[in-house]
Image (cartoon, rainbow, N blue to C red):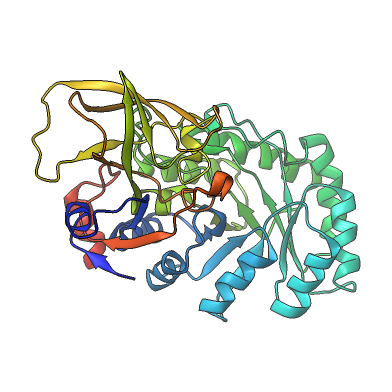
Length: 392
C-alpha cells in the first residue's frame, strides 16, 4: 500500500478524480493498546466494522488476537492472515451450512444464540459436539445508542431464563451476552445491561463462565462528544462488582467503532456547488452510508492545496454522485464559505463502516486506498495519551 506523509501530500501528488480512502495505522495501535491496558477482560475486534486486510493485520500486530465474526467470509479473512487467531461466531442467526463449515473446517467452537431453534441448529450442525462455548444473547435497553440494535437481536429476560438453562446442558462453557447499541453515548447502559444479566443468574442460579458486554463503545464526532472511555470501563467494573458473585466470570467485549473509527478518512472532490449544497464524488452508496439515514455528522476539512480558504465558515449539506435523490447527507458539514468546484474535502472518522458499506450502484465505485501518517481530524486521545500508547 502506497504511503503519504499527509492528505495534503497525497492530493498534491495524485490529484485524484475519484474518492480516495485513507488508512492511519497508528490510530488503530493507540486505540487497541488503550483497550488492552484499560478494559477488565478480553477484547474481540468486531470484524464487520472494517475487514480491510491492512486493518486486520494492524489489529493483530497491535496485540488483539481474538475476533468477533458474523459470517464465513469474515472467518476466512482472519484465518488468511493469521491461521491461529481465535474467532467467535457471535451472529445469533446462522445457516446450518455456515455453522457446520465454521465448526468442522475452521475449528470455531464459540457461537451466540437467542432462540431455542438456533440452539438446535448449532447442536445438530456440529453433530452434538461436546466442546462448545455458547452465549445466550439478552435484549437490553438501547436508549443511549445512536443506532438501536435491540429490535433485531436478543431474548427477553423471561425468554432468556429458560433458554439459558437449556443451553447450559449442551455447553462446555456457558456465557451471557448483551449489546447496548452502536455509538452508545452514556456509560450507564453497560451497568444496566449487567444488571439484567444478574437477574438471569439470580433466577437460574447458574453463574456463567463468561459475560460478554458487547460493543457499542463510542468514538468522537462533531455533534457527538462522548465521555472518556475510562468512564465506560469504570461503569462496567462497578456493574460486575454489584453482581456479588463468589466466582468472577471471564469478561469480554467486542469493540469495533472505538478501535478503528479514527483510522479512516475519505477525500472527496466537489463536482458542483448550489448555494449551500455541495455535490461531491462519493455518497451514501459509497463510503458515506452512515452520513445518510443514520445522519452521522463526520468532521470535515477543506484541503487547502495552495489556495487560500475563507475565514468565514458555512454549513453545507452534501449530495452524492448517483442519480438517486436519497443519496443525500444532511450534515451540517462546516467548511470555508469560498469552497467551490474541484476543491477537495477530507471527511474523518470513516474507519468504522466506511469501506464495509460501499456498493457499485450507478457505476460509481472507488477502490483507491492509501496509507497516511498525519493525525486524524478528531480524536478521543490527546497527543500525550497517543504517544504513551504508541510507545507501549
